[in-house]
Image (cartoon, rainbow over all chains, first blue to last red; front, top):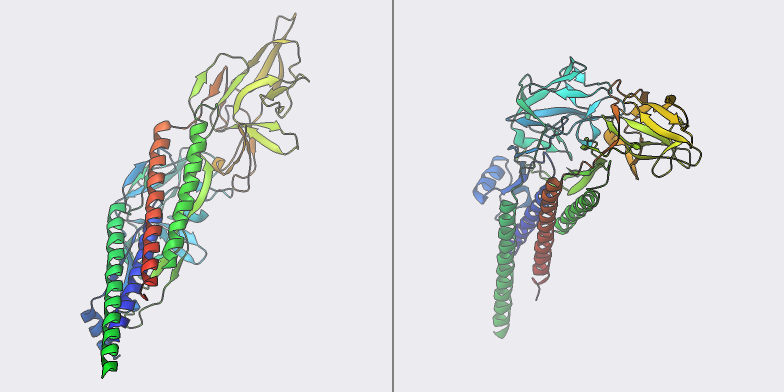
Amino acid sequence: MDLMVVAADAMRQDAVRLQRIAQNLSNALTPGYKKQVASSQPFGAQFDAANAAGQPARAGASMASVQARLDPSAGTLRVTGSASDVAIDGDGFFELAHPSGAVYSRRGDFHVDANGRLVGALGLPVMGAGGEIRLTAEPFTIAANGDITQAGAVVAKLRTVRLARAELLEPVGGVYALGGATLEDVAAVPRLRIGYQENSNVDSAREMVGMTETVRHFESLQKLMQGYDEVLEKSIRKLGEF
Amino acid sequence: MNDALYIAATGMQTQQKSVETIANNLANVNTPGFKRGKVSFEDLVYRGLGTAPQQAAAPALWQGSGVGVASMVKVFAAGEIKKTDQPLDLAIDGNGFVEVMTADGTPAFSRGGTLTVDRDGMLATAEGYALKPGIHVGLDAEQLTIQPDGRVLARMTGQKEASEVGRIEMARFADTDGMVALGANLYRPSEKSGDAIYGNAGEDGMGRLVQGAVEASNVRLIDEMVGLMAAQRAYESSVKVIQAADEMLAMSNNLRK
């Protein structure tokens, strides 16, 4: 009956894969969204990993072998013309203050809230070189090096960080917690583009292909199970004849 | 598997909101003083789907729950100021607002437009909301001049010189985008926008008053059309996901013939 177990596991994996595609496609227009890619480990690697951990390896895929990781690659930039929209040209993330600690995002549609703080996604305060950025009600401008100018004077500087292993960032919704990623270069100043917004990096054509592939794979597993079921039925019937 | 259905449904709902906003923007493309609405999206909460104990270094499997509307705001970018040469047309060249008195006494703020003199002789908006503080022009004023700094001068019948009858006070907000639209070119402050900061026209970023002009809507047709196409295609892709999830569910049901 191992074959049934293997096929059922693989079908569950396909379902997870489809969820990820649904997540990516529904966020195709979310600014700064980073797509998630699912990958399965081949049996050999699973066997080795289980062996190394001293656990019995069993045939077949298992749910634990599906891995999700973030694709931190940059999305395309879109002109918005709004002076408070900032996009990062190249590597780097903005740092925002979340109640549970620092979070990171490449989404740069900032505005000033009623308390005078510069805030980004989810209304979280944007971090400057010296903590939260507080502005007065005067109009402000952001320069390509992150300097925020108000009434002719530089009042703050946006804090941008470069992360190593950014694919291990942990999604929180709108922003990313550090997760397995590490801060690499805190003082790095990427070039900022003012009046631009970063699109999501979801490629809908690729997602559609993935979806077709997933559905067909699921279908072939269904056929496999049905075929195996028939074989079982036949052998039981034949055995009954004796 | 059902999760894919629900995730895709959030995609359809948010794109629907986006199309509704675009429809409202397009419908008001020629409304003086209209400020376009903007919907922005955000991916919703994530939850872990179980970790791989034998691969401690491997990332956990995160599953999102779709997309949601992060904010629906008005974009207060300036519209083009169009000259009309009507003495009662008033545009604001800047970020300020003019406060008016609404029927229920709550403060509301206007971006100008066509003014009238109501039956009490007070300067009011076209909908009949008197400006605050009240400016009594009188019913027999022949000529009305609104200076860029807000001073209102009226020349009465039989008089040679115009005299100052009041001054239009301006207000602005820490976060203009946080204001709530009431319709009819009126806005109400919210917790997000903060309280009104009062001042004179032409000072501290209030903007200057322009008599004989109206502010055109800030809707840009091409941007709206592109947004409409993007929203429609995104909606379509969510529909396809729902179809795929449905197909896979049907196949699971057919495992047992």
